[in-house]
Image (cartoon, rainbow, N blue to C red; front, side, top):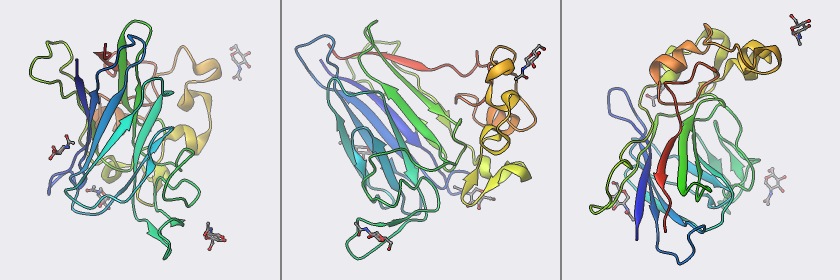
Length: 240
Ligand SMILES: *[C@@H]1O[C@H](CO)[C@@H](O)[C@H](O)[C@H]1NC(C)=O
Ligand SMILES: *[C@@H]1O[C@H](CO)[C@@H](O)[C@H](O)[C@H]1NC(C)=O
Ligand SMILES: *[C@@H]1O[C@H](CO)[C@@H](O)[C@H](O)[C@H]1NC(C)=O
Ligand SMILES: *[C@@H]1O[C@H](CO)[C@@H](O)[C@H](O)[C@H]1NC(C)=O
């Protein structure tokens, strides 16, 4: 049995310069608890990005209109995908820097990237037989992104929805949060409970002046707010 889902970073010429499309395609296994998946990461932007993925995948260059089919094996730890922008690498191609999402200068990341960065997160083969996936803006925003299920024709609902963050949050980023190539989270900039939903803010955290652009422009995505009934994670049945 095969199950598919898609992560997309979206762009049109008007609003969305970057579309990173990733389809999660769970492949057949014999172990119920061992769900594998394939992410089809596509750059629909008119510029090159360098998608990165951990703990499986590393990273690579992805020119406009091209795709990267990333197999995530059964039993892999929860993972994330993000798109690095503005990279330059040396003649070996393995060492350089990126404007956003840089992971210590490596082309193939083994650790997390540097904010601001839009994140596609996934956790395969949960105990309840579900794969979880979401888009998170808790590390800020750098490119529009979608993460959409792409079930095969014989896959019945409800595995049909996924998060989209189609807007260019950078364009409406509050001045204090502006960063080269993106928009930082207020938590990262101010490091206060009310922005990070930590400490006394854990249970009372609400959208702030600073989180509102994120919440308003990408309501499907996680951002710093406990008022997140409208920004849930999404699920699809795990591969059997
Ligand atoms: C990945 O997605 C792109 C864009 O939709 C599509 O053209 C391509 O065939 C897909 N690749 C795979 C391996 O499914
Ligand atoms: C990467 O570049 C830095 C700075 O130029 C250099 O110090 C380092 O040795 C390089 N690493 C590799 C693996 O080439
Ligand atoms: C988003 O907006 C910023 C600021 O206006 C601009 O520099 C950037 O190119 C835009 N990005 C996209 C993907 O449209
Ligand atoms: C949390 O709230 C309590 C009660 O209002 C207060 O005494 C305490 O100082 C607060 N802690 C922080 C870290 O703000």
